[in-house]
Amino acid sequence: MNTLRNSVQLIGRLGKDPEVRTFDEGKQRASFTIATSETYKNQKGEKVEDTQWHNIVIWGKLAEIAGKYLKKGNEVAIQGKLIHRSYESTAGEKKYVTEINVNDMVMLGGKS
Image (tube, rainbow, N blue to C red):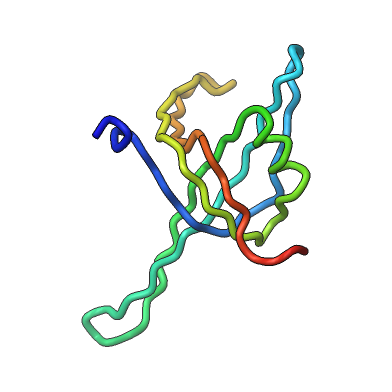
């Protein structure tokens, strides 16, 4: 049951190309957003599409792969854990961020 604690699995489409940063020690970090959509009918019988955006962070070799092969609009399956963090903006405001820190990724669809 420990593998179920703080575990997230999503399939979605990239909202932008991954941004890859390389740090001094050579470690890489890729970040991007993915959209997941759900379609349902409301009480009036109208079709409604609800889209949620998720912040994705990938480290190491997977970050290098994401930067090389993923592009805006690609469909990807990710598995990871939720991370909540906060920081202070340059204007002195406290900001809160929720991200999915990826452990595994599968690129879906054919070759581009």
